[in-house]
Image (tube, rainbow, N blue to C red; front, side, top):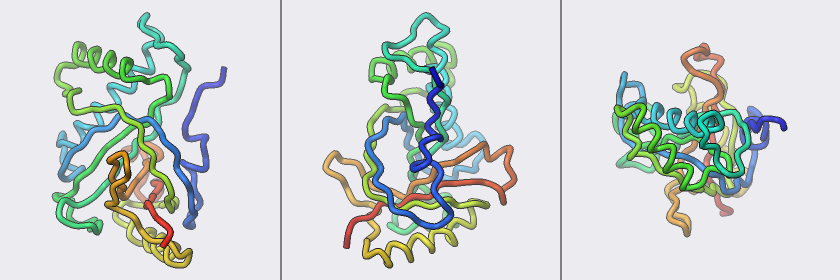
Length: 217
């Protein structure tokens, strides 16, 4: 059987470099919340990323541990994603990194149930006790109607790409819906998906999916 690779779902992970409208269905994620500058060495954000990968690889490699979950299929660990906002503003000011609030997350296959997640937390806690798995949670996230675009270049130049998104939203008679609360309690946010390891890619060649939730005006 072919290995599951979420990145092959091109409608979600490989948008064009011009804005497009998309309806994003419910997807399962392991999530970790936090605040502060993501660039601080061994800071809260980098610890969150470590938690996500430790849990995700524990689940992926469960097939070798005698603890393979029911319905397991082999898969490629998904790209890192993040929801971002400022603690005291509805606008994203990319210069105020110390005021960032974020939810860092990794998508999971459907066989990852709460039972599987709890097992993985226990395994990571035993083998890597310095990792605080209590910060992580498993949940389904239905993003709904959004506009997204592929940004190529440094994170600092994202505002130029987002200007295209804003113009498209206005042209299509839509309205940005960031900070809206959905019926299930989900808060809609500025969303980024990081394709590739930024430590190994030149900033000018980085590919980041940028996604903004919208509603019909």
